Image (cartoon, rainbow, N blue to C red; front, top):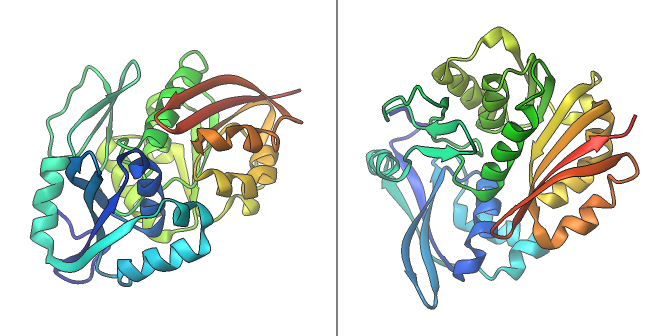
Length: 294
């Protein structure tokens, strides 16, 4: 297994506790901070103890979490308790991922698997090497995004697609497997783009059918028939103008990463141009497909 995002033979392991119903939103924030993986250790009536893995080239994750909570009221309100932070040999992290990251079926015909699991050729396989780039399919927001994307592209082949904040490349790969004409995948994290490139190769998609760009959406000029973004809702709010601009007239905008309690306020930013045509919930998360008027 490769040394993901690490210059040394160790990784950070941060031990945390939170209420069990808060684990999903807490996990989302941790992945945004650069976490490579999350593993539940103990679940009881009081809550969940879990480990979070960070690559060694990041600062002490205990300090990262403290700073993030100070800057983010939503995360601070979740009252995550830090128990310990340690440096662990990289081999242990690798072995742990092999035990934790198993194939997962999503929707009608999609499958996510790591490269060490056997192929299942009866499904469209997204092969993901777990790393820092967000998106393994285990988080509800990614699961929702993939389910909605399969539904959207089922009878709409040859679409042009823009994936904003591609992370591991999981949505971009799915779009190509679902017969999109071309995908433009962007991310502000250069390391995530490197991981997405590897996952594209592992998944066997045509490299000529995708363009990877180190950029935010504000730098893009060309519109697409489908624009998708699986990002925290407060970030989606800041990107609303660009997401709308990049969606061509009559096109579709797929949004995930939305806490259901924030869905109504987020939608107010889009309903002057879009109408909701599909809405799914999973746990505390919502996913939406919007159709642009015109």
